[in-house]
Image: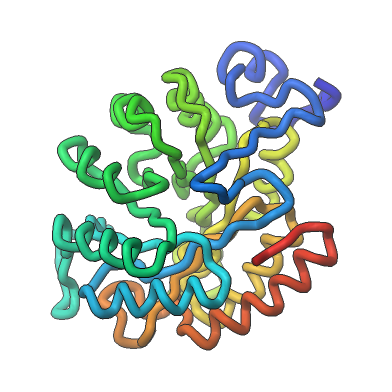
Length: 294
């Protein structure tokens, strides 16, 4: 490989022996992941948008229509929604199997692709039948038996970086998926846990540097999730544009018809109008660096 100094926590020996499948073999070595005709790792920057939680049928279909119209290729939404603590607010209603059915209906009515998280082995087949991309959340990033099992399904996988993981840790987790022969793998930066995040309400800091750092050492496409990372609605647009400028191969955004009344994390989703406006600006930024957003 041309890069003789891949990073402080990654050595040339790591690239050869720890994650040879995830490692870039040359500067031109780039993997393109094709999901129903939408390609990650090419000129297009695909957009995934939708609520943190699938709250009800009407809401998720309404969101699917709105985000697709504004330019999204995929509807994101959690039917199986993990929280950091076991206590639930009055609005929280984990829709689980019913939520998956609503995602399927949104897909049927709009033609939009689906991405949703799987947390438990017993629900993998159910989710795989509906979701075009299976999301593995940061909490499961180093659950190696789970990674191995999901990889064997053969569907495209989005692997979120754990908020305390180094790039070395992340690529090590990716290697488990690639080792099972599943090459349809997309990485997702979703914010790091650091001592200072500029706001009391924000738990994470978006690591923009990991985007070019990952591209130096790995051929895998990488996307950014500014919503989870900033945890603060006013910062989502600027961090989206910054992510595009840093070279991401996709964007994941939380979009909700009524953000302030969202069942979970009401501080971070943007509404339909804000999403539409952000897509218009994002197209200009993407065009300026030779990329494209539909």
